[in-house]
Length: 464
Image 1 (tube, rainbow, N blue to C red):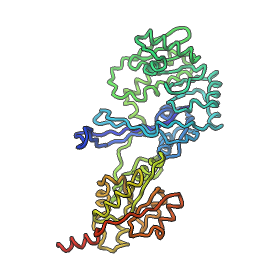
Image 2: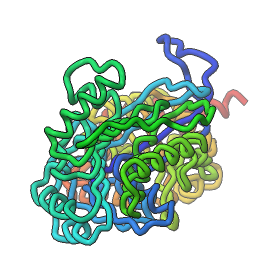
Image 3: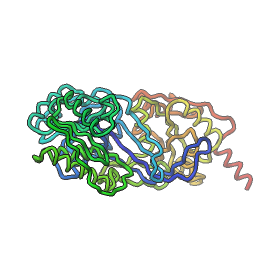
Image 4: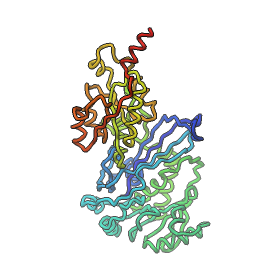
């Protein structure tokens, strides 16, 4: 049970800096997606062959849909999150972390709980609580049920400094050393000080034990009778990424306790499991998490994002639109052939971008233009036209449509604003009724005098 996040790693190569800032330009070649938080614990246990229920909260956005696909081997009981799915994206260039980009991580709406979630907890053989401070672990009904179940099955609680207090009688609460420092509010130097701080937390939380994980030094068990240091095996490994080690430890500890092992033996098994996990590549080795960046579809410059098995891939344009709208932003769309890009096009697109938080260009396909304008058009292929549009700083994404009008695409994209040139009457456009159907607006922008594709094409032909 706990908070589920979307974790994304972007791996690439950096060989130069931005011309306008001392920042590396990273050419991304590999994208790794996985469920994070409680979702990662559930995925690990399912991959181990266990029967797993995940009690969590999920949003109704594209990231949540992707999470459900990644968790296909887990029974998910999810309350409504009431906000965007938290997404944590790490940018890694040549093995070096360059930045982490968080989306939706600041909002912490209180999730909703239903009876199905309580029933899953009631029937559990062991429980891992992965609290990432996003309020699910604060839900009174969930806490009461876990505390009741803790009387006869092991509960392993992985705490967060900004999260909820662990329930009473948890078999093990598993802070790492930085978390122990945050909970204790004082410097902790040496195993003796760790044991003292851990013992105080055990008493404060009324836990059966506090198990402090110490990275390469193993773990320290703070129990009611004695404190025991369990050393990590001397694996001789060079660990480049410790992400997920705490989740692996908590998951394995719960399994060992549920199998009837004593606490010391269970901690030994959990440490060995975490070391083996890191030695095998850590989170990047998880089944189903690795995906190369997909190539653009033939003739279409809008890239597709990885999708769940059996699901259609979602293009960058659709993913961008959903992400912007999920955070309260306005999606602007503009359409046309854009055959021989000229200054008039640029002025229209710049004006359109100023009306919202992103601009998606709906581009007529080559076949669509031939039907509308004859066999002599287009002058440039849709791939070239899309590339030129994407080269403009005001354009965030391009989506190609093959119909004569963009109405079907707009129904699926559902932008907040649709922009056309002032040579159209907004009230006469079929798109106007569509946009107004979901509360959108249609805006016309003045044209740049003397600029047209036909005029430019004629001028070029005259030069020949």
